Image (cartoon, rainbow, N blue to C red; front, side):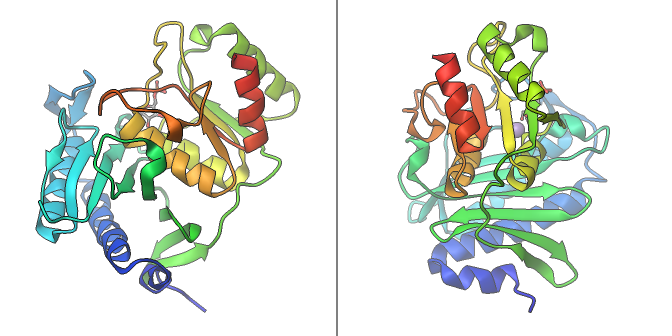
Length: 294
Ligand code: F6P
Ligand code: MN
């Protein structure tokens, strides 16, 4: 029997269900704009990255819609330098990567939207998330949400989002690894660890969008990293917009995340714009890596 996202969400808190459903509708609109809003904008984000027209549009679109919905108190977005306060009486604080992997737009590879949901005021530790989700604009648009009831995946069809798999657990043993940054810049203990994985038969798959690279770990198991690099000791990915939501999902499905010494979800933030090295996937692989890096 087909179960829609809306039906599935009856199992969780009403207001949270309303927010997740709203985000699923907004994501479909973002997806439908991908063929039209193309090219570069004349601006850079707070991280010094050139913004695309679609990055800026998706960011403003989500913020405007959240303002209208009254559910959202404040937003932390990869595309905004400061916390954006929306509704005094809102219930949730939301983190946004409105269009993750936007450098894949030109080549028509995977992109997506990553969301973290909190009740506590931001900035706070990622462990205070009450839910996290991503929408992957792939050959099929898929949505994964994680909340107190587990991790679940939906496919977008003519009947809307329908359940593909519920209570997802990360497959053991894993099969894949995907690592960002230049291999020559990986730190020696990390390089040695990856060589060990290669000898054990793990296969490289790297697509250049965190949302897609994480999604394959969810389905096949293994490890994804955007590690500390000799040239970028702090890594590349953003703690709030990217690392925290995916770490929440990974840990909820029995996997693990680390910055090299502690779970990403335990990091006490210093700024809403901080970056973090991230290693995420099967628990055994992440724990072994942590021991290698210490
Ligand atoms: O948002 C940053 C991002 O596009 C991630 O989606 C991805 O994991 C990473 O950057 C890719 O970086 P690189 O181009 O260095 O492989
Ligand atoms: Mn991103």
